[in-house]
Length: 431
Image: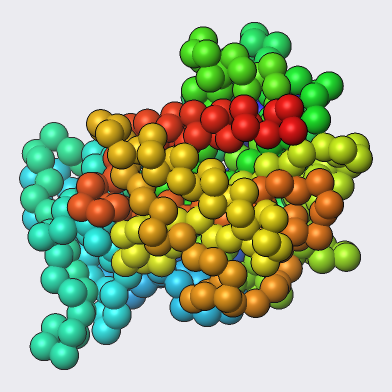
């Protein structure tokens, strides 16, 4: 199956299969507030930039999110677009144009939407990213009404893209998946048609004739991009020639959903606390989201006697710098999660160029935000008799224990995670 999702935008529909643009009449989107808001923002910023000679703003790319309050010279005042989010959240992404040789400033008036390492930035249209750094910004406080950051832009860089964190888009996954296009062990299957008409997909890897089933999800909260680098690292290792990879392919059947909320990833939504509820509160008798319904159907279809490992990858709060597991309300499942966590901690202890991990921040049921049973994937798995592990793993956005997140360190941590899963599976294989 080819990944051929369709992105609606104010300027047309973009086919990610052939990269062509089909322009459609604007009236088709007249009642769609999300796209009309993007369109109005784009043209107001364009007009302001052309008339006044200011920097410009481009919002016409996948994952863009910002409300522009003002442009003045080389400074722009923005805030995140919460759209259908029921609570204040913090994801944003914006591209400034006409920036060559300028010192640009971005302000968040009377609020703070930056993480520990400031914004991520890209000088090449989102292909590569870096952090501006922990000393690059001033936080909002009683003496500073705005959180803001500034950056000197090189003379040969006419546009710069900024984001709350380092993004991971559908195009990023497609570049990764292209490596395995002709590999029979890496199968891309249709998962569901989403509410916005995107064709979501899942991956099948491994041996369907064995009892151990490995279910891995990411982006149930679509803004939590760092977790996608972790998942990509797991998949890269699983598809490698290492002894651990070969063992996992032979002894587990893997069902993987890289973008549970694909609509939100593409549109640049927050995803967290989406109305009427988000994807990770949709594990109900009648799910709202087609992708969640398909995940539930697949999970419940595993035969009696299966041993299921279910892991849902997330990112924690804006300023949290710990990575950790949430434990299930079911004691048997919680104990198995603890075993996996301790294996991962041991493997990560001496690792180099990977994000670090310690199990001491894991959250048992009854503590912190893990204090009640809800309709999340983690608690849904606890209802299944075949579940050995059903957990949420929170992977910090920007830094962990003093180590700054990079895509490569995230992927390398994913390799360690795959090895931890392998060791755990060896322990339950013949029991």
